[in-house]
Image (cartoon, rainbow, N blue to C red; front, side):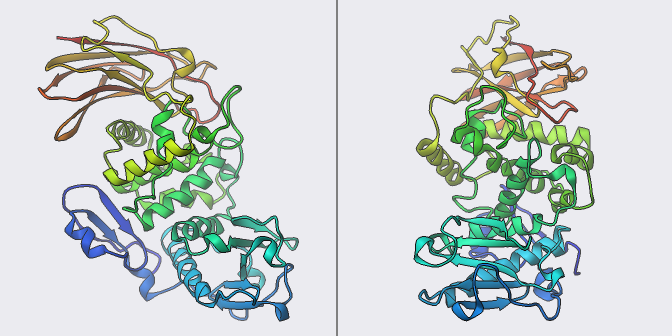
Length: 454
């Protein structure tokens, strides 16, 4: 029914994937490959209403000088020396899909333009080859009349992931929640959520998760690391700044693997909340549930992002190899031989201890068959005094995939587990996760651990 999520679920083994409005290309093949699909078809029957009598107007062009195509709330503008009539229809198809999903299923709102009697303008620009501003790039802006608009470069025009990402930003524009502002410790979520929407539309796309290499390379960085909230001395390279986009993998994991309702990823943009996005998710999902899922996500990341396809992971690592700084990586905070630490408590370097809602990976090289005992002792507070809260997972990899075990926590600081490692195991990892009820800043959370074989 309109305004609700009507699911048809087909469950089989392997990872989950879904779309909102309309069919995905190759859906039959995806079913055949054994993927669980959650498909919503409500927008095929009832699209959101459009105000009557919208006016065409732009501070950037005169109507007599341009070509314009309209549909719904959208107006696509371009100069007539270029032929974009067919392109405009493709863009309109995609933006209409975004609008349907955002309003019908994700509790979001139209941008202000239609409420003011105006179309939302989308400009196809050619840099210095047309009269539109040469400074335009790719993305949403606000014109002199305080109306948002979207600028799309001709060379990047029909990329569906880009249209989904930028289209989702259109539906974040009218946000009335101060806690979700695009700044400081909340800004990361604007980009992560837009990229998450992309993942809902192309869950098996090879390039859908190209940013995740930044997460495994520096898992100790705070969940909310973004453009404007780096710690003193933090690099400002690709490894760190692109990471906020890769955090869509957490939102994907929460909705697809953990079954968190989709609208929780988006409804915080509206409703006037002053909570930061990370605190909002903590409240909406629940402290215990979110901490469990976050630690499980960290473990799955350590197991070669087990919730994604091998092709997606390989493509992400290729991307990282091309753009990242190889000197700024900390895949593991420590490595130990097959005997572990021989039961001795060890503390990782302070500068690599996990920040808020982040994790460390400790690797056992060439593990042997038998029992391993893992212990964790967390510091009671972070480096700036916030109360600590830890969890830990053991990840075992082998020819048949990965298995996981949780340390049994006595309280928020300490726990232990004994895990039987089978013959043929190729990887053994301790993943220590810091998840305090503190959602700002860059303080880190130190701990001691020991690993004993036998």
